[in-house]
Image (tube, rainbow, N blue to C red; front, side):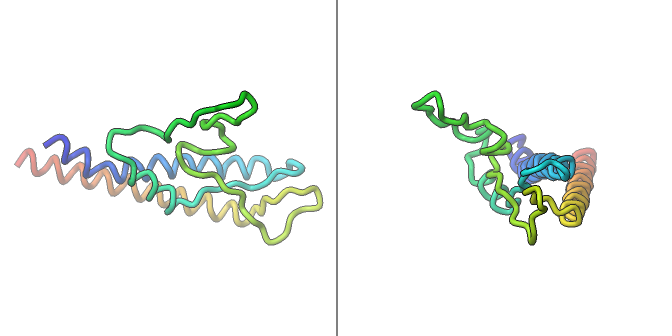
Length: 138
């Protein structure tokens, strides 16, 4: 019984975790809008969610990679992954003169969209839990 409940909520747990990580990346982009040579970063949410759900239940985090040389970047590095999601550089329409690729209009829209979808997921989870409690209590 507990396994079925866990499986039913696993999708939403994974989606909320990825949304939170994406929100951090978008906030970082906004915070670095005036930093010379900063490149805007983001994750492909659909691909990251698919990868996270494809992992076997009970496995936490990305697979560990072997570092054969000290100069290799660790797998947990913020530049390589964000909680298992591949971080990509956003290609902008036009870079600033200082090499910064942050477009504040795009970043604000993505930030608001991601926040709205996060809140919708939280509301949906709350409704599912309320339905489960109603079924249990009779």
